Image 1 (tube, one colour):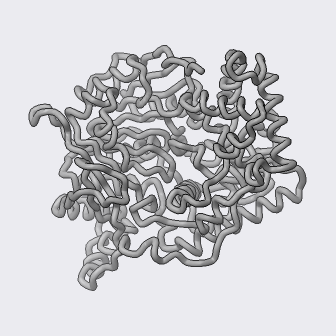
Image 2 (spheres, rainbow, N blue to C red):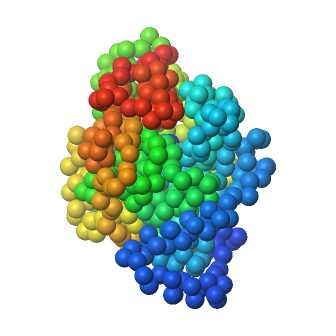
Image 3 (cartoon, rainbow, N blue to C red):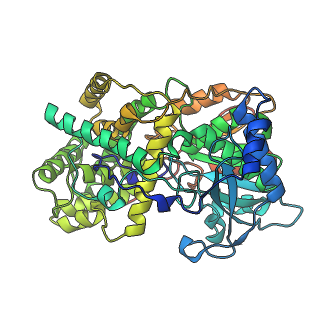
Length: 537
């Protein structure tokens, strides 16, 4: 449930490579000493929960070591006064003295007085696979929504394990991964399904070939444990945290594992934390919600037909979409934009309101005869080596975490039945989403039982924020999290559907988030807010 799902691989998977990319882990994983190994054997025999004991050991070590803050490397794109550093965490929390990963962190100091400062505020943008390192830039760019909060908190971002600068994993050569055009996600025959299944299986095998040492440990509970070690390294007794999209599931798992370590926590655009939803059913639910929001966007385009000239009813706009899709299937636009690439581009509209005008504008220009505008917008940039590596890495982490967090169906007949049924009524995203997740059916390492998210001793009430018509994380997830975290409050942005609410301009939401982070204040009951402003052409 990444913050920018448009960059996810929602199209057919590229064939996995066979080369091991040892350099990805070079310098990020360090070996234990002999004495440390002896401590590992002897020191963890007590304790009911080996991971809990391991986390406590790692956190105590991090608290003593702290973080050596320095100017950020030039190629990280993080300007002064943002500073960067590293926090060492165990690859395997049952072996806290074993191999270590270096987690990249950054910060910008609070802008207020010494008396105003309340500590560090950590952030995760979603995914799994999203980098949080750009969070401190909200202070650099003087984002007014966060100005008062920035007076009280250092803004701290991090790359979760496996992401970006933090021992990045890989499943396929990045240039192969982005190569276009890919197969049409909507199968036209059983042969198409067999081809997609083969690609998914090869992708899973590629993940193991390139990242085998990391895969068993790429889980949300381990990322939550890393978060607690980061908290300790920062010198914070308790965690202040904002999680968006998948970041809300990270928050839910952290709050369950470390309830007494939470101070303030905001969950924005909530993944349904029910064990029955993580992760297979959550993705099927997503397909339904995306169709709803796709329809919302088409209705808006139709209302603005005077600008876009794509039809004055949803049916007319949909007809033009299907015509475009059929044209690209027959002859990929510019030789590189087929139906798969169209889905990747157009899905940003049901994802974010901020994409409504740009996507409609490109679509309108295509309808008026400007094919190149659509090619430029939807085709991969094969010259962007670093960007393509980041895209492939993000998808690898997404796959690794979701596949390892929970058990997935292994019988193709289950996938075929469920997605065939859903596609009939919700065709926009269903098959694309299915192929993206299908590597989990043949995942080569252990799949776990999801954490039973619930209120534990010491957990304070948290603040939950959700748009009613969110496509990526359907509304029911926010309701479910509130049931599980007792005393929490839910702010609903009614009749709105943009993913990620806390960074949008809506005083009804912004003022309450700010008040909670600054004072801990929550409303006496749940709150409904009118939607933020609808985009204007």
